[in-house]
Picture: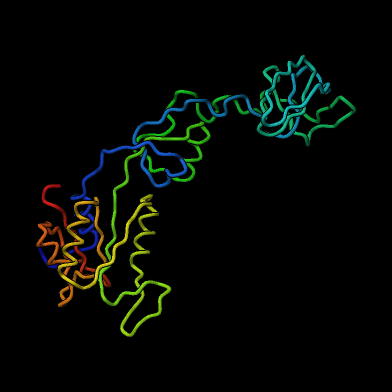
Length: 287
């Protein structure tokens, strides 16, 4: 393989050589961000699950006139069982269940109150300001397709359907190995010749943005035997091993030699980019 490849070619090779998982798991919604839905999701209820007021105002049983007798009140969360005769109304609030016998909702700005009666200014149109049952989605219809990446809005939608767990594809297990005698942890005083290690936290948060929340971090000094030992362990334990440092051509860069000794197949090494030209990607021959 030629020494240097383009970034786009490197990405294509990664995608070509990575095995797609088929393992699934059932997880709670509060842990679902960034996961991929493993099955088509059907709505167990309609949304809204009842006829719902879109305004603060009055629900009416319309008759041929603009005056109505107010017989009650319905606020959000109330079970609406009032039966309205023609010419009757109930005070109603946004999100509340509209009585079955009501056929329109008038916003409160168009209402004048006269004791227990109201009058409506303007033309009354049937069906106004009422969200029909199932306006957003009907019960037993497709809510989300398999393969959808779950973000905050899709998770909120699923929660509105009353679901608390969903099937998703299992995220890969990942370990980050940081190499180098020169590295010190943040919060510690630097000794001469040391720098603070920053790649692990950067990579860990990049993985978190993809919904990979469980990531281990290991530290390895510039020692060939230790590097080979740790790599052998992680390659057997994790789906992906990310290594920071130790892959160039210096006398104390041992990662490439250790991977070769462990039988890792090199897919590419060195990419046309600065910084980060000595970028290595490999895979096990049996995967």
